[in-house]
Image 1 (tube, one colour):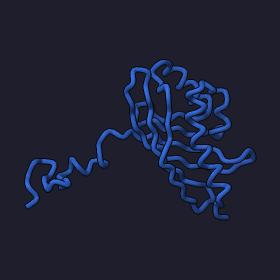
Image 2: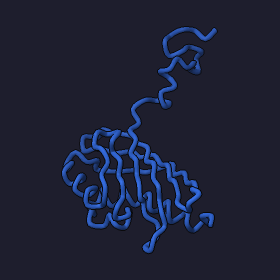
Image 3: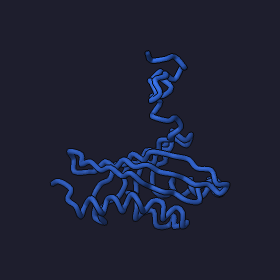
Length: 153
């Protein structure tokens, strides 16, 4: 059955819940966000795959003061998958205690279970290169100059 407006709102709120729980240190409530056997893939950040809510909680605690003080999620896009689960793509901004920021893309698979929607898989993909790397591949900028300095004329 297609996801309706109510499901879309619930899934979007679920994606937003991540920042509130982590920023508030409410790591004992991660079962409201994730399935018990969640796969939380932070390989792109050097952390590998964490399996299960306890592993996610333990990793956050081990990171300690190196965690962002604020997680901001935006630009949530939802698409229904053939099995009835939902893929959510969203952008995340992490603000650190020293004022620096980092940007990621969250790629989530969200399933409906006995307790409502939960994230069963999350990949956290670091955003380190502008324009997805297009600018560094010789693409022409708005001023008619390629990234290697050659004129497009």
